[in-house]
Length: 407
Image 1 (spheres, helix red, strand yellow):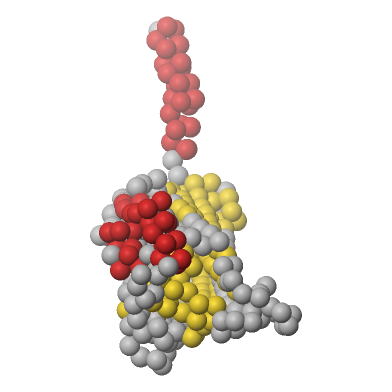
Image 2 (cartoon, rainbow, N blue to C red; image 1 turned 180 degrees about the vertical axis):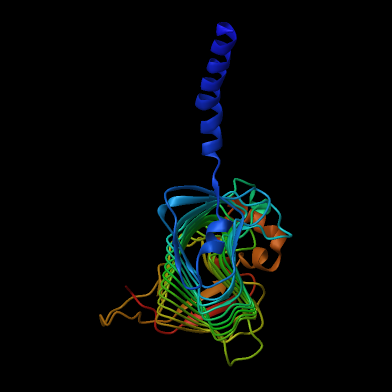
């Protein structure tokens, strides 16, 4: 009996030391805590891990104090909001599902007047998904996507059919795009996005303000499709080198102001179609385009864009066109060209003669895309030299800047 009692007592101690701590380590369910919070109240979570997924269906504040974690089940969105006036701050959310059909995300927002600030979101397919959300602020969040190949990733943020929101000061990495679809009148300011496909993918979203963002190591920096009247100001775009992309790309998106941006080391600094209409074209001014394969590329019709006071430095090709005549109506004035071959004898800071760019042998690869492979090869360099030395055909003038800046 004593032996059996000793064995029983030992078993109880094993239960206390090994089984009970395991049970205690199970994260608490978050949903009952949300359900118990009154409308308009604040749920301040104690430090620790809480089990998701969970849904907020009333106006309230969820505050994690930067010490609370919501752990998803790896099969769905971690935290969903289906109400107005919800604040989420100081949380870490991790472990979404991996379904593109469901758009599994760290946070799904629906409704208006939300605030999502100072959260860490990682190991998620989509970071934050705004679905018909208006007048909300998404600020100072840090989002890291799942460790997947580029084509299998979701968007760091997806903004769909949403207006008058502020997307500010977020840090995004290892995701596909920052997407705005059918979402007019939003402010996108001071965000940082690296390691993605499109830094910003703007589709049918007019009148956005895109300002002071840092986009690096993406296939394309900012692509604007069918979205007129944008302002792109003070952005830094670098290392966008995918074929067919570029630093900033416009397609049928007239009336934009592109100013004070820095575009470095991209396949194309700025690429724009040339609209059939002279009204509503782009104004491109005071930008720096440097160390790109092509500084600017124009395709389509005659255009009429205004390109003023820009700086072109150390681009392999300064300006290229899809065919003679493309962009011929563009207005160039007061730009700095590092390959300008004139003088400033009166010292007014403006070149004495206009700066002109002509197509010589480079016309071959501009008109025949397959020949691009041989661009800057010794054969084409020699052919270009001979063509400039003694033209055997009439060169085509791409542009003329009557007032080139010397500095």
